[in-house]
Length: 369
Ligand SMILES: Cc1cc2nc3c(=O)[nH]c(=O)nc-3n(C[C@H](O)[C@H](O)[C@H](O)COP(=O)(O)O)c2cc1C
Image (cartoon, rainbow, N blue to C red):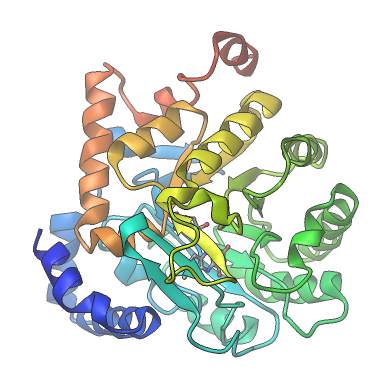
């Protein structure tokens, strides 16, 4: 309520990226004070044991993670986790530092409860991120590292390999982002042949790494159903650890009012308009992979009911970006409490028992084998 008022009266009047930068910096500075950090953790950290999820070989304190793009440079993951996220996915990080697209590049569509962004992976590069990540404590926040292609790189495979070489030692899990709409040609890497080649290149790099984190691929919501199936099959064939579905959509038809004057022509849409398609892609991938892959669902999650629906549709973990922006700092705690309540109401011991229970019976039976 207070955040909604603050958002309407103040925050929404300033450039979205500036507000993001200032609030992120403020939170990171405040969180350096250990009494504040301890207090926030005590108040907001997920404590209900029913929220714990074992996935990707890791013990997540909650299934709710902060989606990629919020902590692009791995500068504030501990601060965000203290608000109640079970995990923070940092990035997208590219091998070389780059400025991203020209501003203005984040747009709020408040009535649609959506954002449009055309950031283009601004970040300080893999070396800088690796040095920040190397300072974290082993029992601290679970951090997924999301890597993408440097815009000017001519050899995409070598570029991903360089990021992986630098970042794999510091990642709890690693994500190949081939689905952002704001780097020219990136989404073409989602064809089965190119993706297989990318996975092979990254695996060759991981074979020489001091540790091999679980490997996932993040896909776009704008793939055809056949392409979603083909990637799901590939993920099984290649023994990927998981898939993240989905990134932002370029489909303006997802909006209630695509012709509204505040809708920019370019950029990926996130938030409420993405909800249906993200859920449909999750259901499709779950049906195709029979519960054999860890699925992370992201796109349009605003409420505990949304998160619960994704979990029952087959997601072991869920993530959000836009729901957090509109919901404010107490939003992760609200979602955690809501999920825990649904676990108890369903008579389950833990959220993991709910994964896939909303899928058609024949799929559930197959995934049990
Ligand atoms: C401003 C902004 C920047 C983003 N940057 C990235 C990124 O760098 N890498 C990535 O994989 N996804 C990025 N995303 C996509 C989100 O991680 C997420 O997949 C998408 O927004 C859908 O979730 P949501 O509806 O909860 O926002 C970004 C989203 C937004 C709104």
